[in-house]
Amino acid sequence: MSGVSAGRGKTQTTKDSASVFLPTGLKVYTALVTLLLGILLFCPLQEIYTEKVNLTMANKAERERTFIMVKPDGVQRGLLGEIVKRFEKKGFKLVAMKFMWADETLLQKHYGDLSSKPFFNGLVKYMRSGPVCPMVWEGLNVVKTGRQMLGETDPANSLPGTIRGDYCIEIGRNICHGSDAVDSAKKEIDLWFTGDELVQWKANEEPWLYE
Ligand code: UDP
Ligand code: MG
Image (cartoon, rainbow, N blue to C red; front, side, top):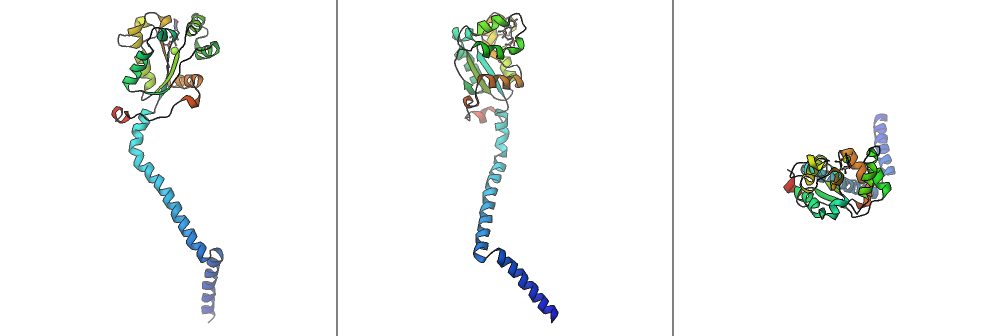
């Protein structure tokens, strides 16, 4: 007898605790909320999973950014469009661009590593002699490829087919700048552009450029 009553007591206790914590209306409500949360969580996860294939392509396209600038001689000689065209036709994506006079402080920071060089003052003066066109370009290996497209620092050593090889003659008038490494590209982009000026957009040609 005592066993039965103990069993009954047990059942009663379990039921009681459930009822205390969750009245019937609340139980249904909790179940619905849990179901809804489950659906809400599961859908984005599934989306991420199915998008995984496309992420590979997007990663390639967005892997790197470089800072390219058309110098005052490039602008004055009407080569701005030609230089932009080469990066555009190659398949790189334009992220930012402006047309401006660069002040001395900005140029001294930009060429800070060269401040001890005998040509430094002349370089800053040359860079202040007219407006410049700073740009940010994006794509797979864009830093290295960008430098190859520009050619050697001295146009005399630049191969035909490169920008400097095709359009200029002397080292002190070499019409364009390009970052020499991923790290320096990041620094230069931060120096010349604010975060707001870097434009987020998807190029439609991406699937035709990256496999
Ligand atoms: N420069 C110069 N004389 C020199 C070396 C460089 O006038 O003997 C100028 C040139 O305009 C060059 C810039 O300084 O583009 C920066 O030099 P750097 O060595 O960084 O070459 P870059 O990275 O532009 O190819
Ligand atoms: Mg350099």
